[in-house]
Image (tube, rainbow, N blue to C red; front, side):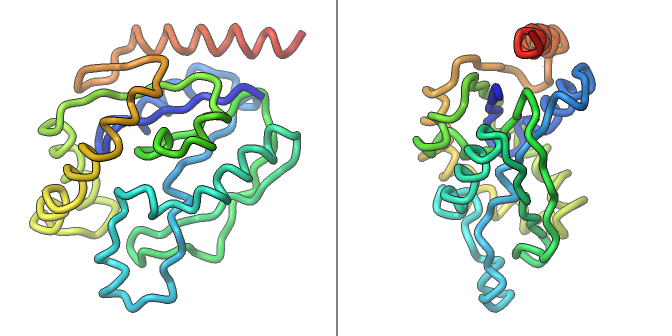
Length: 206
């Protein structure tokens, strides 16, 4: 199994890049694990406390389970990926069965801050996008899918998102093999990456 990591700051277009790549690949050859599925379960906390958690700090992720699942897939074993609910700020009881494939895409803002996870990734890509552009995307996303008000989103950006980006995520891009800069996801870059992936899949089929 070949593992590709796609990282970058919140709102940098990581999911867009993943979806563009997936559209160009044979679906049965690719699986993905989003970092967001591995946020620690905060269901034991009162809701007010859950909403105060810093979800942009590396400690918010259950890295041991994340790395374990990657290693299980690489060993040819199926896993049950957890499901995280942003509205309740906790894991749900639902899990998603994931079977091994030739290619695994791991995506998330903090994945290159974990040395153990980095050692499992064969190709590391980083979306390097300016903060003002990311903020506009974060506002749109968090209002639409995470039940936050514009005021809450902006306060969170300046309280935790930007400081954590500068302290952890910006530094972690030194781990990357490829930096993709600019606000929009460039189609030529997608084609370049996809052609390389197709070559890898073809090699693994021989």
